Image (cartoon, rainbow, N blue to C red; front, side):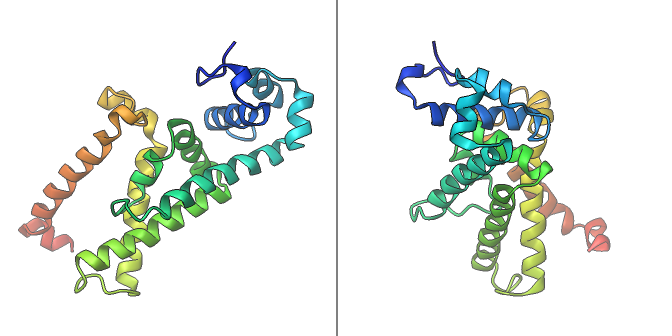
Length: 205
């Protein structure tokens, strides 16, 4: 017998199986609609064992948030990582289940989602200032606003991953197709650069 990730149950601790099952259930149904019974069944344990390890559903959600936050912090401390404007790379450096969890959490609200967005905005501000220091001075309202909007645009592609998967024809959250959104976004940015330099674009600025 194996868990949802195909791992033999006897090779994964019950606590980890419960957490992973909760990540999937919360991502699919949201915290309010998810049931401990379904999480327990997916993890191959009893509801009593879920309650033994995590107490309530809220306690389980807190544990999922802490796990995702730890992975994001780990990524943020990686000095070899490339700049990550918008935060997309941070999501793909976790795992598909965690990306799905964060996508749902950004809609429903959670500390992990808040921390992810704040981190994305902070890194994007640094990227904008380092790349275009005259246009985006450090600490300016212009830089703050641009970073927040850019991060929201990128996060939106994750929140709407089901729709994008349908339109692009590939699972946009899978590691295999991790570059699909970024490639399309880069193409759009390049085209918009041309547009804003046009007469019509200048009228909108």
